Amino acid sequence: ATPAATMVGTSIGAQNGVLFKGGDVLERVRDVDTVVFDKTGTLTKGEMSLTDVVALEPTTDGGSLDPSTDGDTPDPAPDGGALREVEEGEETPGDAAGGEDAETTVLRLAAAVEQNSEHPLARAIVEGADERGIDVPDAADFENVPGRGVRATVDGDTILVGNRRLLEDAGIDPSPAEEAMHRLEEEGKTAMLVGRLSERGSETDPSDAAGEAGDATDETSAAGEVLGVVADADTIKETSAAAVSALRERGVDVHMITGDNERTARAVAEQVGIDPDNVRAEVLPDGKADAVEAIQDEGRKAMMVGDGVNDAPALAAAFVGTAIGSGTDVAIEAADVTLMRDDPTDVVKAIRVSAGTLAKIK
Ligand code: ADP
Ligand code: MG
Image 1 (cartoon, rainbow, N blue to C red):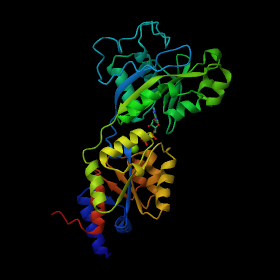
Image 2 (tube, protein in one colour):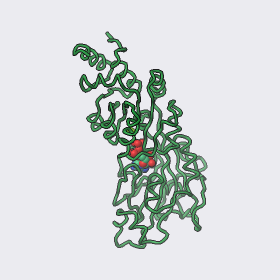
Image 3 (cartoon, rainbow, N blue to C red):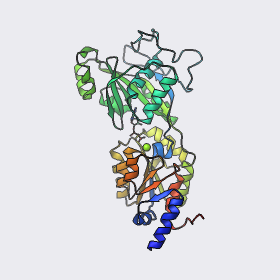
């Protein structure tokens, strides 16, 4: 393209909230044949709220499932059975006969750990506990396990909140919660396991709990159990489905990558019109760039669209990296294109500007 054409394109883009980092980027976008969307914060609003708290029935023989309470509404259950105020001195989780019901225990412990995390999933859990009037204790030795979850010491126990892999890595069998997890994920929610490693045998050095998972399990017998499940729901952006269908109409292949689990990812993909074969879920933060490269190794020219810090390597690896909306500075820095608005249909605009099919507005 001539310098003049590039200037016009860049200017039309800017009028539409589409910023190209230079004329070569503007030309490359035209050749994009595949768009890879990040899920959370890109196709969805990334505004999580706590929807469910499930406590597993405490058992002596290794965990039968009791999905007894389903806090689908943010309000405490009218029967008073769920999430009432915690009483002093009732600190023993699983002591269902005590003053605190099992769901409150699960949420209290989860919130204690998550108050140390900036993750949107974590904020929703802490807000959910707050709205329910739960007194959240402090936690020590907080540790973030990227793409998996978080752990910290609460009341002398190591509490873990995260996905199946987080618990498995700590030697805890998540299967007693599988039925609840499955149900919530099918609803498109992000369900997180709440697990506990018992550290009472080594109280002299509770900091061990923050170390390698293997250390903790080696030293204690009956090391851990899954206590329950908490679930957050996100909202799909109003224009996500329109963006996907406009791209497909142009012959562009649409994919989705997410750290979220397979079932949740597919539920979201279905709602926005992305082929289930084009969904890559449970991708670790480091793995997003690899996933983009795998698509490009098939000869595709991929535009990666993401908002988060953990999308930056994938944005850099893509043929074109696009940061969307209120994206983090890190994502914007790594990107070739920045969409000023939070609107996935601006991806289509970027391609149309580059192809010269979007006319100057005024
Ligand atoms: P995304 O790609 O959707 O931004 P992340 O890579 O941040 O996802 O996280 C992937 C998964 O790891 C989440 O779906 C969740 O299961 C788990 N996870 C990450 N951070 C947390 C946290 N603070 N609390 C609980 N679970 C978490
Ligand atoms: Mg994201």
